[in-house]
Length: 123
Image 1 (cartoon, rainbow, N blue to C red):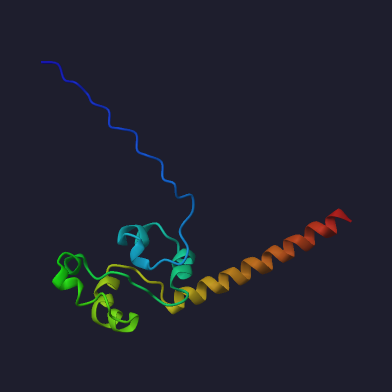
Image 2 (cartoon, rainbow, N blue to C red):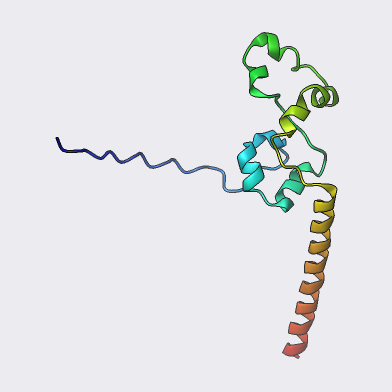
């Protein structure tokens, strides 16, 4: 009996052309956050603090579980449910962010020196 190969459907192109702004980190799947985003991108999303929107999936399945967390303040929510979600994400440390800022300052200085060198060679 001959084998028929069925080609999969072409995936639909995403309408997103850039990363979203001002979203909680759990907007991203943990694997994407941990493996695809740069430290700079991660630092952008946590600049105003680490924010989680939903607890782990099992606490979103039944209404009885949802009412336990849906009306909580951000602080209480994070204290009771957010930390278990955070364990899934690799959050940049203050040292990582400091190193990133130092690198950006060095890059800015190098760019200024390069601009000066180019201007002097044009004269």
